[in-house]
Image (cartoon, rainbow over all chains, first blue to last red; front, side):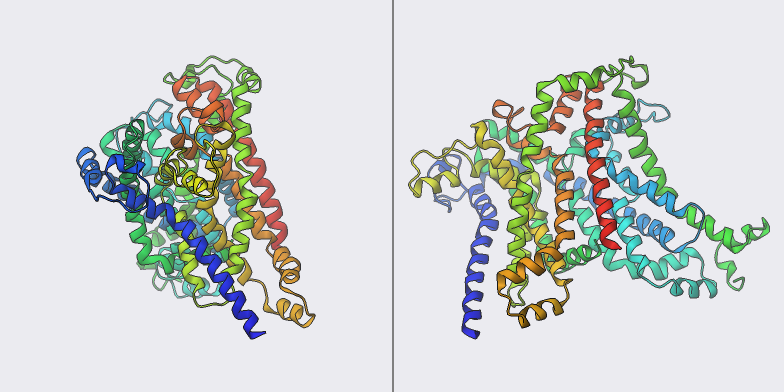
Amino acid sequence: MKTRKRIVDIIILVLLLAGSVLMLYPFVWMIFTSFKPKLHVYIGGLLPQVWTTESYTQIWGEIDLLRGFLNTAMYSIPPVIIGSLVSVAAAYSFAKIRYKGRNALFLFLLGSIMIPFPSIMVPQYVLFSGQFWVFRMNLLQSPWPLILPKLTGNVMMIFFLRQFLYGISDSLVEAAKIDGCSHLRIYWKIILPLTIPALSAHGVLWFIAAWNDYLAPTLFIKNPSWQPVTVMIAKFNEQYAINNHVPRIMAGSVMLIVPVLIIYGFFQRWIIESMMFAAVKE
Amino acid sequence: MQRTAGTTVAAPDLRRRGLNYRQKDALWGYGLITIPLIGMLIFVLIPFGMSVYASFTSWPMGQAIEKAKNVGLKNYIDMFNNKLFWQSLGNTFYYMIGIPIGLAISLLLAYAMNRGTHYEKVFRVVYYVPVISSVVAITFVFQQIFNSDVGIINEGLRALGVSDPPNWMSHAGYTKWVIMIMAIWKGLGSSIILYIAGMQGISRSYYEAAQVDGANWWQTFRKITLPLLMPVTFYLIVTGVIGGSQMYVEPRLMFTGNGPNNSTFTTVIHLYDRTFVNSKAGYGSAVAVFLAVIVFILTLIQFKLNGKGDK
């Protein structure tokens, strides 16, 4: 029985290792190819026979990548943090404060996640272009269209945090109230620390989605200097796809993926645990 | 209650107006949900109202929506008579064949990664890497991996003795599979994590009982693990279909236009091109409303069945 289990363990380990090769090979191939000279792509072989950083000098010289990264960070860090704080406050209200119409308002809010982004993207574009009703400011030349919608919170996040807060006894909040704590104080001192695990799990998901976003910025950001790095590199890659300059395209993809991989490398344990945590709450 | 009322600015004010603590509570309750509600109104409800309204007009992109001419159901009739629309819808749903395939693979992998070995946590991290990677970057990589002449897939097939490997990128019979394989590969890690979390929620006592009864691996998996993971599977199918019905970036960046023989473009690409390329925003809005109806029905099903599972 013991030896049988060992054999099964080894077979599974080998299969998982083989699977890992399949999962990681595209990344390895991408990195090595980005260091090849253009025509060496046709020679075959994973490792470059001649190493060149030409593709990287090209991409850094041709587009303002630093600006792109700063833009992306601006779209995915402060708005997600503020939006998360707003979401916790709303979840607190829906889960712990009693008032008329609470559940109806919650269901109403929840209804908005049923409307897919592609179904509202054209009117959103019209709103941001300042051509409708009271919306008279043209924001398409500014970074605001990728910031404003996140500031008002994330309905999915509110939904999960509300569930999470339901699981916590009311007595904690009641006791704080009897002690004379204001709602803001309860929010800041009790609710926020309590929700940190759930909040960070969903915050990370939101952050990754915002970092990798492509469709919304192509629609709403018409000023090239405000474009996030995804759009800049997609343009760069499409341009070199025409004359088949594969190493340059791969250099573009490396620049897009490697920063996220580094962040992931530092926080991988925590991210996976957060995802498991979020999954349990689903 | 009054002891530290001075710490909040609002409290004395409200007291003077004669509000009791209940009403004060309620005010705070409403206050804390105001921002999300305003956000929903501006960024979801008003735009969706505009989409519905515009779908009954001949609104040309770039002109004021309120001046658009009413054309009744014409856009919907056009849409249902448009071969391209049906093709885009067919492609969109064809891609969803990948959902059950991906789920089956990730279920097995999750099972393999949840046996209590000391190395399985490393695998969870590895298989999750594609999930966090930019879809834009990945799409360009797969475009090259599936390149008919120099791509690694065909090089491998040739090495295995296939003399004439498929033209993945240009033959309409294969193009959809390139996207599907990529989407499955990219999504595995996420469903693996959800499945593992689900498996860890199953009580040990079931497995112990099965062991006492002498059940083998396969019987345990089929009779205990699989049925008890049904909520997770169901969640993954519904979110997969909802996400799949909004597919845009992958086919857009991997293939030019609608793909060889219109084989890769999706309903959202159809919507986008009609609106921004052909300037037919009224027609595009009809497609947008149609898409919303599909997603609405699917979400409703999920909530219904999810709610059942809770009770």
